[in-house]
Image (cartoon, rainbow, N blue to C red; front, side, top):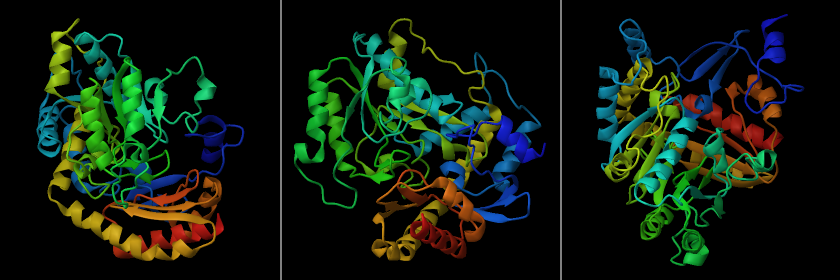
Amino acid sequence: MTPLEFDQHHLWHPYTNVAKPGPTFRVSEAEGAWITLDDGTRLIDGMSSWWCMLHGHRHPVITKAIHDQLDRLPHVMFGGLTHDPAIELGRKLLDMTPPSLQRIFYCDSGSVAVEVGMKMAVQYQHAVGQPQRTKFVTIRSGYHGDTWKAMSVCDPVTGMHHLFQGAVSVQYFIDKPSVRITDDWIEDDVQNGLAQLRQTLERHEDIAAFILEPVVQGTGGMYFFHPEYLNQARAICDAHGVLLIFDEIATGFGRTGKLFATDHTTIEPDILCLGKALTGGHISFACTMTNDRVALGIGHGEPGIFMHGPTFMANPLACAAAKASLDLLSTGEWQDQTRRISDQMKTELAAAHTMPGVADVRVLGGIAVIEMDHVVSADKAHGLAKETGVYLRPFGKNIYTMPPFICSTEELSQISAALLRLAGEL
């Protein structure tokens, strides 16, 4: 049995049918913006390997940090112990994130970061005498991860909640904000969607928090909405004793053209979930940050301790990688990089506006999307990758890229050409 045959018979890939697993490329190595297949074919990683590989594959600063840490302390439990990589990373995070977020809980992955954030919200409400507040409100078309509680606040249609009826918690869903980021803000609560949020919070006193992806919805549809919605939602949540959770796992660390999508607003969330690009994509890691109001509220309640503690919490290798990645971001070069990606993509994808089957073209920071008026095939896109020299993986109606920030002008042009070709053939 060849390696690929073994893979198809025994290894389960994300969102695949094991009876019809679809095409798979075998990757032998990766560096910079490129991945190399076992047959020698080189492809630009137009997905940043699911949006996390900001600085490119095998970045020498990050790999050195991991190697150096490996020689000293690969792992130690975080219960009753600590270490310099966790402390140094914590200092760096506090320097970069909204100032009210002073408490950091390290997690294994983005989905776990969301689970932790939701658990914080429920435990906080219990601690302050609101034990009935155990549910959540969110907007449709969102995505927050595949673990149980995180899945419960993903879009109920695209998240296939009907498959898990009776197992997944039932939450409250409201329409996604109607005003796009490129439109003028509408001061009308009915038209902009805020009336629906206010009515939901007024009618239901069992809601612990409002959770959503700020400004950019990722896997739910690559939709960019107006940040003023979040500014006003903050006030509505405060008026009803409901916490505000921002899931920035996909948008954090420069992807939207701001360091965090939160920076497009004038407010700060109570809880912030970070992951994906935290380590520059080199090793799985995430964190959940919160303010003293939530942290001390939990601490002063019963039982006083926060009820969560992963085995690999604050893994030193991951902390070292994350610190190195944030050091790279601290140079500020990412601002010029995302601005260049945005400008070039807007210019080179302009032709898509008049292509048959194209419903919309939108670009924000290091994100570019061609939305079709029909569902596109990821398998067909996969089949064209060797011809275009770019690995892209569309979903739903969206053909999109989130390229590594370090892509050259020529590499970005190759990605644009691949997007246009997929839009013409899928």
